[in-house]
Image 1 (cartoon, one colour):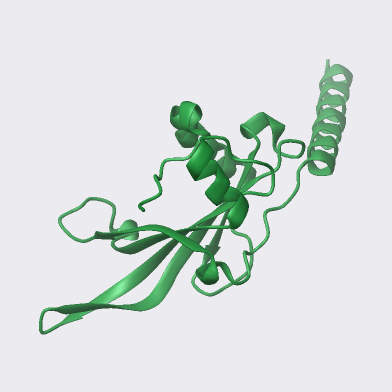
Image 2: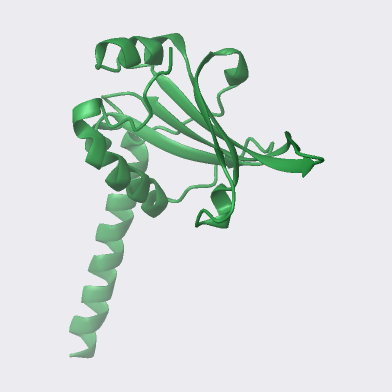
Length: 162
């Protein structure tokens, strides 16, 4: 029985190693979107207490590159579309609220070949002004599961504000 258990553990390890290797070979990383604040501004929303989830308090800005703008206009986001959700912390003084620092940016990048299992979209998050990727595979799956509710809209929640 001990030999069977050892063989089973070794076999499971080999299978997990193969799955991890094959997944890493077919998964592309989403890169930090350099210069995104010069892209088209889709919309902004201010979120303050008593809204739940303290992590999301601040000013939410959404930016889109030119390919993503085609998607907002046509309803079909072509490969190469990138959408950035930029959350800025705020400070209020004498009734004036201003942005003070970046909390994080979330990025969606469309690549149907590399992100086939997630509706063609790759997901990533960058904290503060850091350009290091922070999301685990499980967190990226959570992003997709939430965006799946917007499948009819190309998996995108935001609407371009003209």
